[in-house]
Length: 116
Image (cartoon, rainbow, N blue to C red; front, top):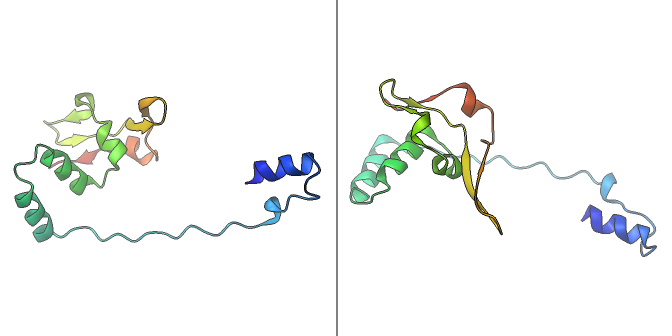
């Protein structure tokens, strides 16, 4: 929006661009309640034949984002220690296909997710 209005001022269509003077609204934080054990067990029983059940388990146990789950490779999994690290993401980008990237926060690099 700002860029369009800057161009309109430059082309003398508008006298002034007021976008920089406007304070954007604060983003509302979403509150999410984690599943309790019974709910997860019901889900796992329902999905027991789904080949993605291990991915669902990791998602529920760690709270990882979808792109972080898709970016997992065996080089970040330590089964003996029972943890994994998130060092990459994988997400679709229009016109480019699947693109590897960095996690959204540095927290993922700092501490491993425990899998035990």
